[in-house]
Amino acid sequence: MNLDRYHQILADLAPHHARLVAVSKTKPATDVQALYDLGQRIFGENKVQEMTSKYEALPQDIQWHLIGHLQSNKVKYIAPYVSMIHSVDSLSLLSEIDRQAAKHDRIIPCLLQIHISGEETKFGLTEEEVFALLNDPSFAQLKNIRIAGLMGMASNTDNEQKINTEFASLKKLFDKLREKYFSEQPSFCELSMGMSSDYHIALRHGATLVRVGSDIFGSR
Ligand SMILES: *Cc1c(COP(=O)(O)O)cnc(C)c1O
Image (tube, rainbow, N blue to C red):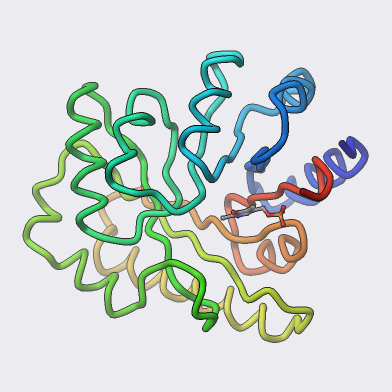
């Protein structure tokens, strides 16, 4: 663990009023506890089972954010406790989150994951697909989810200009959707973008949540 980096990241985020999702995937619960003891409360995981076992082992006021691809059949395991799901990429997944959240009398904040990278391997909705989702009559029926914003991952590249362009496009889409669909809903306010290698770029484009793992916890 690199606590100097942790404190530096917090200092980098502060002027932007952005919050850190400390990505603890593959790292032991003791690492999470150590950061918790310094005041960190938001942690990100990409696997349902790993997140659930950490949730059970660690303090109850941790806010667990699911940031990895989520299969519908696993939503039920996290619905009782998850704080935010960053990786919603279909209406059917959103409907299942709504169904499971209702069972626990909860409203689960969700981010729509947008495909911004041009890389084939990354999950996410295209701009066209996100409009189709929001225009679908069945979307309006979902009462136990709240769309809190967007999430995106830039290309894995050293080309800073390319990353700049991708984050700028996500911010532009965020503003467009906010105006068209969420102008009455101030809770549509989160832009989750930026990881260890590119969070400083994401901050310049209005990130409100950055998801940083290896920079803090070491390489995986
Ligand atoms: C692992 C992961 C991160 C953190 O990546 P680092 O490079 O370790 O900071 C961020 N977002 C998602 C979706 C991830 O899976």
